Image 1: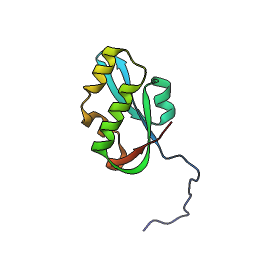
Image 2: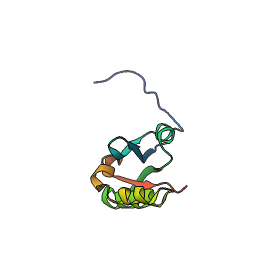
Image 3: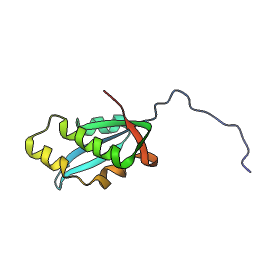
Length: 100
C-alpha cells in the first residue's frame, strides 16, 4: 500500500517531437520533448495522444519530414528511413500528428 497525498500536474502539454538530425554517420531519427528537439533541428513534427496506429502514423511522419525544406539528396535519405526507427518514438504505439 502506498500512503501520502497525490500531487496532480495540470495544464501540462502532452506531446513528443520526432525529427531528423544529420551527424557523421548520416541522418538519424531523434525524439523527445519538443523544446529539446527544436534546439537540435528544424526538421521535426509534433505528436499528441490519438488513435492512429504507429505503423500508419510512422508513414505519415516520414512523408511529412520529407516535405520539409531539405536538399534533394536529404529528401531521398528521409524516404529510406526504416519505419521502425520512427515507431520507437511513438508513445504507447498510438498517436496523432499535430497540425502546425
